[in-house]
Length: 438
Image 1: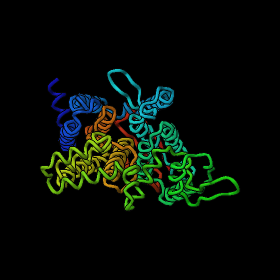
Image 2 (image 1 turned 120 degrees about the vertical axis):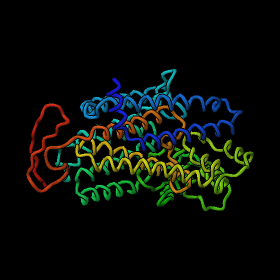
Image 3 (image 1 turned 60 degrees about the horizontal axis):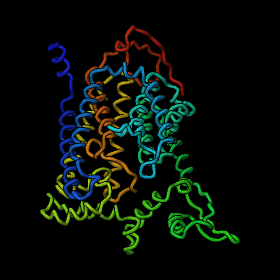
């Protein structure tokens, strides 16, 4: 037993473990700061203790994710993906919480299927791409995009725009690494941009004045045709909810000198930037002022936890957190670069793409560089589902690092010649041939 434990600990990627531990400490301290600032709010009371429990659950998930060989997990990737799709459908029929259908209440734990979908999606896509080359052709991209659009559509209905946006960076990074042609991916991006900005008219005659005003700000054109008033705007804006449009308008109107716009539509963003600025270089001893802004900032312990870090520990604290994420990214890149198993490499790259996109979007919206989308900061924001999923994702990185198989043949994703691959990591030896197509 001790020999197995010694071997297990020797293969663990300790820099990732230490970086995760540092982020978890920052998480608990930041949630404690937010709880102290809003001590009168019953919803925040006890959040620090709950976050410590979530961290413990996340560590347990990390250990489990490193013990089970990732190849064995990969064989069940489609099953996990299908079960997660079932949960995404189920949650739509459950009672709404804060005007959205995102959570399944298990009494002792709130499960968020959209968080789980990020991980099961990467597993399924990596398993599909591992030894194929049909995605070297344009039509071969169809199946990967279908695998992406199904969960993305279900998550968007909840609605959860932030999580929906995370799936696509992971898709493009994994396809690019697997060998998809850059001109094909560029064509897909061009088509997506054309669809997103395609002008769609909408009749707003019977809508409230405030709703019409929001759509006018984001419109290509607005005016009357006969007795009816129309707004022509980008296709996604037609189906967006009222609060989503308000967030986009508040983001676009940041430089506007009108106090009313900042107060009503951009108050989260405004207070977030005030808190970040109040921390200065190393954080200032102005607790009463910061507490005032913390109380005025909804979701300061979840989506806007980075603002709390900046307000409490200043610019140095913000930079320190980003350096920790950078360390995880470089360690993961090293794992991907030294892993010859295609599934393992795609799995690592998918997790890194997901992590990088989530960090950039969360930090960007906190600083006013991106619209507010309700994105959590990985392993820092308050929440059980987010903490568990991100810890399991890091566990998969360590899992691949522990089991880097030796391929008896050329490295994967090398095109241009007929070749024979015989991976020793997939049980009984089996061979297959691949040819360059396209």
